[in-house]
Image 1 (cartoon, one colour):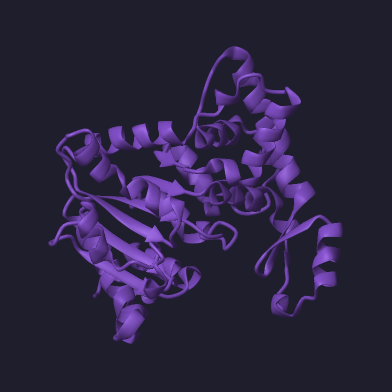
Image 2: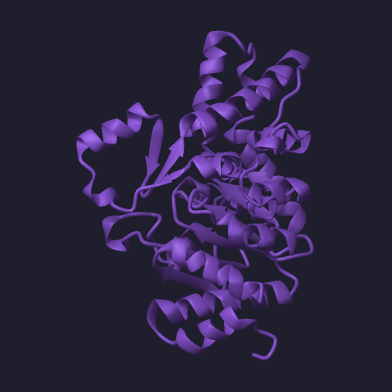
Length: 325
């Protein structure tokens, strides 16, 4: 207890029961997994980058508390949108009371709303589009192919966006990931804003070879190779924020290796999920961890945790606890 910082001590003192206790259990389990030599994958669904999760996630990456990230295309790009256009964002705290006309007026101003936050099209999306289009076309013309996150890494490392930074760079988890060359998978990237822009560039003929950006099947193959490599010496855990493809895609690597390839694969060594999905609705995102035993993903002995709460509140607290803040 003495090694804990003030935030961690507050959590330990006050969070005794129900979802609060589950938060502590998941955080303690994360630390124990790491202390035993385990590695961790974090999955990001929802709009966690627009919620500025980088404020804690970037430090988790820098301190080697994260070894792989699986995220949606939206989370991949929205951290960079925030990096270059933060001062142009608008908060709409009364979003529950907006009329259809209010929403139309936001559209007319090219402000795209994510719950209580509006992302400015020109300063965020179009600014990134111009840089990424340059990356895509250069690769296309030279016959090179990269994954979506690798194109972002190249853009960030090039320094072409640095003049536009509007937050402290230490609070961008994508910058931290690029600096670490953190392994990443981004399944279903095509449905993100940049994925749409890439599709449009292919349709215009700006990009001649559609597979210049590598796809989901290749991500699964890379995930399988990463999993086999890292689990030779370490147990790999999974910390899932939300549901959807960011979590569903990578967790399947174990049964795929075992059942479809006939290769021995260790089960995931830790599993925690922050979820607000309702199990009884048939939602896979809301399934209790034990259901994953029946799919050959988790074992009877795998430490399993679920915190049924708001990820924008829970994730920063757990990360702060893991970091002993």
